Image (cartoon, rainbow, N blue to C red; front, top):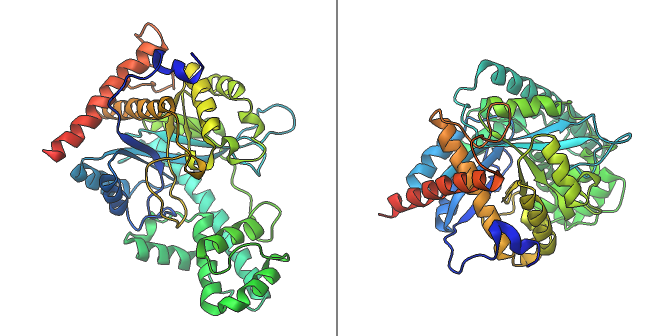
Amino acid sequence: MNDIDRLNGGALKEGSARSIVNTHVHLPPNFSAFASAEEAVQMAAAEGVAVIGASNYHDFNVYRRFASAATAAGVVPLFGVEIITLVDDLPGAGMLVNDPTNLNRLYLCGKALTRIDPPIPSAASRMAAIRAASDDRIKTMTTLLAARFGQVGLDGSVTDKQIAASVAERCGVPIEWVALQERHVAGAFQQVLFRDVVPDDRPAVLERLFGAPVKVDTTDAVAVQEAIRSNLMKAGRPAFAPEAAVSFGDAYRLILELGGMPCYPILADGASPICAFEDPPEALADRLLRRGIYCAELIPGRNRAAVIDRYVSVLRRAGILVMAGTEHNTQRMTPLEPIALGGEPMSEASQEAFWEGACVVAAHQQLTATGKPGYVDSDGRPAAGFSDVEARIGSFRHIGADLITNRSARVQS
């Protein structure tokens, strides 16, 4: 029996019940492939996705609409957050974690949030500070990018307020709900370029903007948006502004105050080479456990199937839950079922692990929402009263599986 077959004590039973689950997407007004939260839920229901987890930055107001649409469709909604943190206790002078370009930056997710409507005062204060720092950074980057466009004869009058108003109108939400991200800004300036420059002239204009030859299809809006980000908005580029430092400890505490479970999003071979913090997966498992993180998440579309299996096997054997999502954080619309890079099939054991992880998180959310103990407590410690980690996971998996299947069955009947 190899490592991946050891998940759940051995090979999967033939015909085991399992639904499609996706625990990581971004909903508008976050930058998203979807036009609305309702569209995301409708797609999930149409594709047979039983669980969809939102991982928005900075603002949770759209989660009411998300929850209402999901309940009507028989889809289980999971409420989450994504936070960019600064880790200052890594080995040596610095280390790449799950941000492939910035040292000591660690993306941290919170899963199964239940204290968001409204959050307790301390959590609300933390969220407001994070949001304000992000808004200031985006304003600076927008100003720098506008100046760069003006230098090459393009419209340099775009402001962050104009972009936010456009996003709010497009998504049908109040402007207060809009927390701009880099992709919103890059998208706005891509639209300026496409509006004012004919297709044949775009390569030359972009070369002047970037100070280097253009290597993307300049008729592809998404490709041009990504090129603007990478050539003008990343570290060392003309429109870059450093992210405000949110300490790992503050972000971890915020997630717990919101009733959630801290979760590490794995980059793996989405970076080349794999970031030092994550290589090898055995070291990653040890680092996560020492930080009190008991669940992790892959975005399989950026990883080879063999790499997915390796990380799932090692982390799950260490008692760390593993989930899977798709992000949907560009304008390219893809199916909601997570699949490996290039469409490679993922092993049954990895798919089972993703289902198990979604069940446990759904159980935590349901239980804590009703005042009962969840998978982790308010200090981030795993639930007590179980003989071992497998008994704990198995118990919460069973609760979550019943919740998911019953929700779907009620709508179908």
